[in-house]
Amino acid sequence: MAASSVRKPSVVSYFNAILFPFVYFFSRKRMIAGAVSLLVCLFSIPLMFFFVGVFSYFAMSAWATWNLRYELMSFQASEQARAIAEKMAANSEKNG
Image (tube, rainbow, N blue to C red; front, side, top):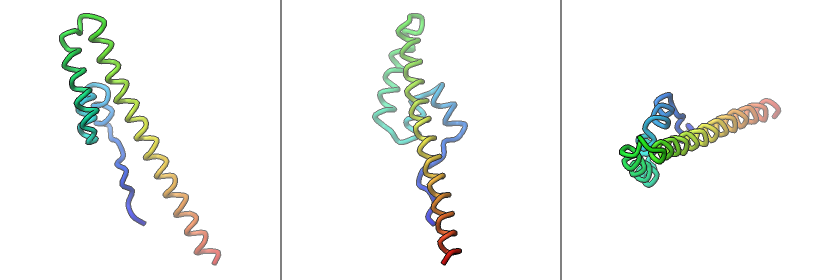
């Protein structure tokens, strides 16, 4: 059976998604999301002393962690489907 094309997110993915969301998106080859996230980050850095900067930074981090959660669910579902398919193939060979 072919290896899964879905790459499992690592601990570094969590670090990037929370602290540097634009790095996370660029590492996942999502260039538009990375560019938007980088622009929001560059906009929010000078405004960190105001509520707008803090809110935009946390919104950007929430977006990246939400995407990471979606990737983890997709990876887990594909791994479960692969395991079920292997069990079904083994049972069909065993039964006849």
